Length: 464
Image 1 (cartoon, rainbow, N blue to C red):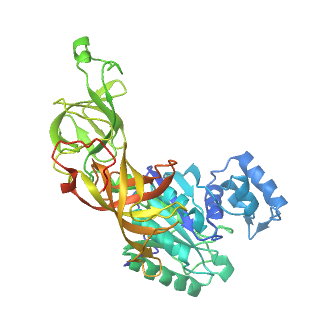
Image 2 (image 1 turned 180 degrees about the vertical axis):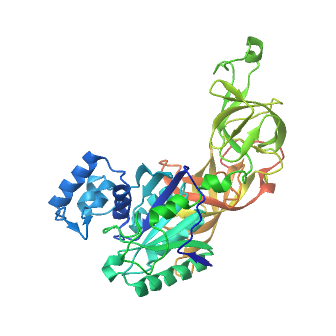
C-alpha cells in the first residue's frame, strides 16, 4: 500500500469537488470545516461577527494566539440549537465555498455512533472523505467504522487528517505512530491510496496554509490536497457505460415537444429521466431492461432543443426507433454492457435503523425510480471492525455493516456497485412506516432469476 504525504498530482482545475468529514466524537470536524471557510475567506462579514460574539460569550475571548484569531469555528457549521448546546454535530451540515482553483460542496458529518447513518448520507456522493484522528488518541473504533464506510461506498479519495497536533507539541514521532496505525487499518481494508497530513484545526496549521510549526512535514496543506485531487466526474469521464433510469413516459396529451410539426407531435413518445452514467448519441444501440430488448436512439430532446448527444448528469428525453413497452423504473442502457435484470441479489447493507434486521424480514427496495417488494433471504455475515472481516450473525442492528441475500418481487436492472455507484445502489425501506432502514450496495446477482426475457413482473407479494 502507498501512503501519500506529498507530491499529490495536480489533476483538477476549476471543477466542482464534493467532500465529507468523518471521525470520532470531539476529533474537531466542525472546527476544521470552520477553519477552512475562515482561512479561505469564504465567510460573510455578518456571519463572522456573529461567530466572534458567540465565541466571546463562551470564553474564547476573541484573542489572537501566535497571530491566529481564536474563535469557536464550529459555530459556522453546527446550526441546530441542540448541536450548539451540546457541542456536538447531529445532522449533516452542507456548506459551499470556492477558491481560485475549484468550487467545493462539503458535508460536515456527525461523529457519534448513533448518527453513523448521517455519515453514510454525507459520504455517498462524495469525491473524497476527510477522516479526522485526534493525535492524542490515535485510531479508534469509530475511525475504523468510517474508514470501512468510505471503502464500502467506493469514495475515490481518502484523506486522513491527524488533528490537534498542537496538543502533542507538534511531535513528529507521535504523528508517525498514528500514521502507521492508519497504514495498517487501510491495508486491512485493501485501500491502496491514502493521503495523510498533520493539522491543527483550532490554530490553523496545514489547513489552508502550510505551517512552520511542522518543519518535518513536507507535504501540502489540506486545502491544497482538496484542490488537486480528481473528482468522481474526472475519474468516470468516458469510463462508465451509458445508464438512464426512466422517470416518466411523455405522450402528446402530457407535454408539447417544441419544434415538432403537428403530425410528428401526434406520434410523439419520449422517455424522460436523468443520465446517471456515460454518454448517449443519436443512432446508438441501447437495451431496455428488464427484458433486454434492443433498439436505437432516434432523437434526444432537452429544454426545447434536439441534441446530437447528451451525457451525465443531464436530464433529457430520449426517443427510440421502436415502440416498446417501457415504464417508470425501467433502465435504458448501452447495448451489450449490462449483465441483465435479477430478482435474487447479494448486497452489503449499512443498517441505519434501531429496528433489527432478521432473515425473512419483508421490506421495500428502492432502486433508481423503481420501488418493489422484497424479502431478506439470508444474513451472510456482519463486518467485524477489529478484523474487517465478515463474521456469522443472526441479525443486523443499528450501524452494523453486513452482507445479505434478498429476493425482490419484480426483476431489477441492477449493476454491481463496483461497476457503477449509481445503478449498483439501493435503499431498504420499512413497508409499514416508509422510514429508510438501510443503504444497500450490490455485490452479486442471479440474472436467471429474472424470468423469461421481455417479461415484467406485476410486483405481487411472492418474494419467497
